[in-house]
Each structure stands twice: as C-alpha cells, then as structure tokens.
Length: 477
Ligand code: NAD
Image (cartoon, rainbow, N blue to C red; front, top):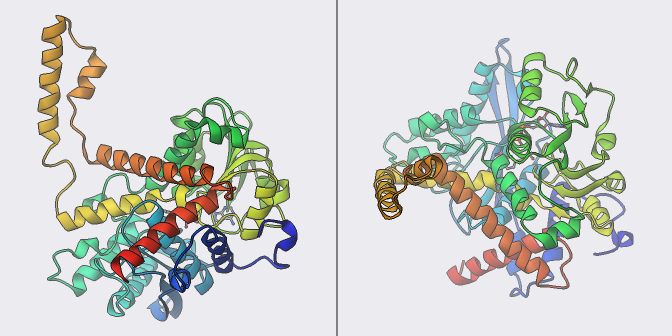
C-alpha cells in the first residue's frame, strides 16, 4: 500500500498495523509458501487472572498476559510491562516486535512480551512485590519463565527491582538450577545484572542517532546538516528510555532538548532543557509546575507538532497517527518507544518525506545488553575478568617501547588509555555500539540498494524477516 487513498478507513490496532507493516516488507522477499504465515503467527498467549492481598486487606484480582510470538530460537525474550493500557493485542504486538528486533540485531532469541494491567504508581512497594512475585510464580509453573525457555526483562512500569524479585521466585522454585539467574535480565548489578543495562536502550538509541549523523546520504534525506551539536530535539517520555537518551544527546553530543512531554505535563524551552534537573524536579514535585517552561495546557497533538530537527517519541505506542501526522514539523522521527507511529501515521510521514528510524532498530539496545547479561549469567563470570590485566600489561609495554623509541614521554591521556584494560561496562558499551552500527549498515544497504524500498522501516523488516526465514530453512524448524 503506498497511497493514502488505499489506507483502511479506521486506524488498525497496534497488532494489525504491525502485521500490515510485515506484509509490506514480505513483498520484497520470495519466501516458500506458508513460511511467511508461520513467521507472523503468535505461537501462544497465556492470559492470567491472579489474586493478591492489597494493603487495605482487600483481595484483588489482577489480569496479566505473556505472549510467545516465536520460539524458532530459544529462549523467547521480551519485557514485562506494568500499565493500565496492557491488553492482549498490545502484548501480542510487542512480542512480535521482539522477534523482528532480535533478528535484526543478531540476538539469537525468539520474541515474547508480558504485561499486567495495573497503574504501578497507585501501589505500595509491598503490593508491587506481591503482584510481581505472584505473576512470576504463575509464569514459572506454566512454562513461561525459565533460562532456556522464556526470559523477561524490564519494560514500561518495571525495572531492576521487579526483575530481582522475579529471579528470586525462579530460584526458590528451582533451587538446584545452576543457571537460575539467567531466567530474567535487567536485574540489579549486585544480583547477577550487568553494568550498562539500565541505560542500554537510551544508549543504543544514541548510537543509532550518531550513526545516522555519520552518513551524508541519510542526513540529506532528512534535510539535516552538520553534527548533532545544537540540533533541536523534542522528546515524549522521560522514563528509562527517554531520560537516558535525552540526557546523552544533550550532555555528550551537545544537542538542544527544546521540548519534553511526560504524563505530568510538558516543558518547552528553546534555550535547551537540563534533562537531569527536570527529571529530578519531576521526582521531587510530581509535576512540571514550578519548572521553567513547564505547562499543563499543551496536549499531545500540539506537543508533537513542535518544530524540531529530531522528534523522539519515547513513551507509548500510537502517538503519531492519521489524525496528527500531517502536523508533525520534524526533519526526522526516531522511534525510541515501541510502536509510537501507527500504520496510518507512518504512511502520512512517508508521503511528506519525513524519514522514520523505526523502533525495531532504535530501541534494540535493551535486548542487546540483556543478551550480554544472559551470557554472563550462563558463563558465571564477569566479562573482562580473564583478560583485563593482561591488556593493561600489554598497554604498559607498548607505552614503554614508544617512549624508548622516541625518547619522549607519552601524552598523559594516551598513556592512560593504553594502560587501562576494558572493564565490564566498557565491553558492554563496545558490544552495543558494534551491534547498532552493524544493524544500521544492513538496513542502509537494503534501503539504498533497492529502488522499490523507500523507507527505513520496510528495509529493517526485510533484513529481519530474511534472517528469520533463513533460520527456519537452515534448521528445518
Ligand atoms: P517508563 O515507564 O520508564 O517511562 C515512560 C515515560 O513515558 C514516562 O516519562 C511517562 O510519564 C511517559 N508517558 C507515559 N504515557 C504517556 C503519555 N500518554 N503521554 C506522554 N508521556 C507519557 O517506560 P520505558 O521503559 O522508558 O519505556 C518507554 C517505551 O520504550 C515503551 O514503548 C517501551 O516498550 C519501550 N522500550 C523500553 C525498553 C526498556 O529497556 N525499558 C526497551 C525497549 C523498548
């Protein structure tokens, strides 16, 4: 479908829209009959009702889901979301997206996703712990949570704390399982987690933006020039993903964050917003009131129409749609959230020549570093433990040899760099950077190498689908 006239009259659901996006990409591949349908189908969905005593003594029934979209590679991987918007369509769409995301960035996992329909802000820590532990126990006993079968991670509304509780539930139910900690990723670093996981999604998205800015042909496509310094950026969502991304882009790359929207309100400031300060203000005061440029009278449509170089939806799905895509005034849209641009919105942006770097690429940093954490848990050793000091010794000898040959002492910064062996965080960052660059290369090659493909999203899906199809064919799954 390439014309606005051919769009369905009603905006499809998240899952239907994703399915139509996949169909569009499948037209560029020649798969054996039936394989496309198998790749697209959701393997299974577990729907649960489970009871938890709340603090006021009331026995409350919660509703949760875990979808396994694909198990052609195991474990199936994907986050657990706590939000009131969680439903089966959303969980299935997010699980499918995980399948394509993992394939795109060469993470050898299937795709899964889970969620519980709650507003986490309305529950005490004790209640959240009870809800999480009960949900985890249900998942374990029904075969939806194990190191080799299905491995959750954080998503909206959950974080390291919840992942720690989940790991503890699994360990308690499987005390002899030596790889128990690999049943979930995004755990606290002190309990089997890995440095760099919390910020991984934002960091990965930063690497994606940096890669785009290294490519003159892609910059030209978006009408962008120069480097990231001073570029006007508008971000929706200042949670795990949006906060780290906005912070890194402004503090490390010199970009100007001119607009931020969260559930609490909007901050608009052309001089640039101090992201960490704003986050701190939101945490302390629970809203934007009192923060310079803070407003509660701007709705999402008006906010998303703020003129900027990069528009970064990093909150929830369905934000840029048929009803507001025509008023977007950005040179490029970077999908840091999952599914923030609907199928209809995507068509309009494409027609308007506004490129979209898609979610399955942009936010793949989270699952990439989760993969590193899972490997660490299975190998029972931190990365760099065997070779760090060896590298430092080698660096020291290089510095000494350089100084002997030149008769001059080495520059202090270079000396320090050569004589510092990579620690685990440095290795994680390096692996993440490599992953994001490699995936960009593959998307770019498919996009620019095929005249029939006119957007990054289709190119990314073609790359992912080709890899998934090859796995099915190679393994005879
Ligand atoms: P989070 O819960 O940490 O933060 C969500 C942010 O979005 C908050 O600032 C919240 O105020 C804001 N928000 C929520 N609803 C909003 C609305 N209607 N309008 C404006 N702002 C709103 O969530 P997160 O972990 O940062 O996830 C954000 C998105 O990124 C989700 O789509 C998630 O699936 C995706 N994602 C997250 C990860 C991860 O590692 N956490 C990885 C990949 C993708």
